[in-house]
Length: 170
Image 1: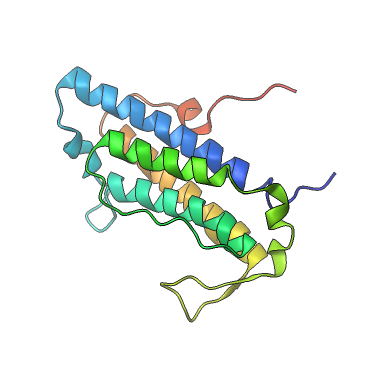
Image 2: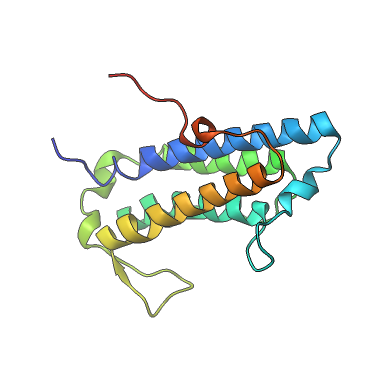
């Protein structure tokens, strides 16, 4: 059986966003245990010219929640980028996951040949297959990885299984 565009997108993003939410749970516990203001972690970055944690989470959710609707020819869910607390970021993730779970697998059947033009990149249209496999998947993983790295760098006790999540048994 071959994999569908749905299988390599929506469930993957739902899982990664769930893992990201769990990372934020550990970040909140870290702040509570050590009496650290959450804004310290939310504004942390690995280098002066990179986005802070809060923006990493926003971009990861934006990329993940946009792929299904764009490939299905629908309008993506819009979320304001105004989160200032970990619980607000977790709510953003939950909203994105809920939205992704409304997309029917068959909605992405014709995704490969769709032409996708991002609003901020109007001069760079992409075929649906390229958009999913070489733009969105790397972007979601990059921003979730960077969020993990920011938290780990700041002392939150995280390991590889926190990033990958549980392993399903056959």
